[in-house]
Length: 116
Image (cartoon, rainbow, N blue to C red; front, side, top):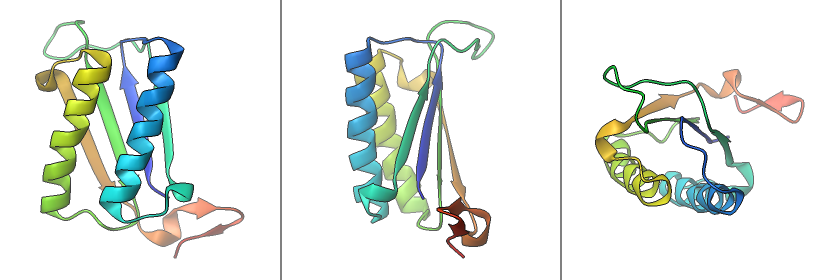
């Protein structure tokens, strides 16, 4: 039920991308107290993007989940996600936006049902 999506204009090697998604899956599961078996991560590289009028390396991270987003959680996740992105993709933290979205359980479908 948590979904972490990365959209960027950077295309890492398949090995780096795979490792990043795997590590982020574990991080999200741990920080949100959700089973990793419900966490989905995805990567959209080589997107046409600008940030501040520049097409230098940049990244949008979307993290959606049913509940669990307190200000303390989003604050610490922002730090950790930016550090992961900067380390794995060499994108400066100042060029990363993160959107946290709480989704009502009845609006999140899975396996022919929903979480509401």
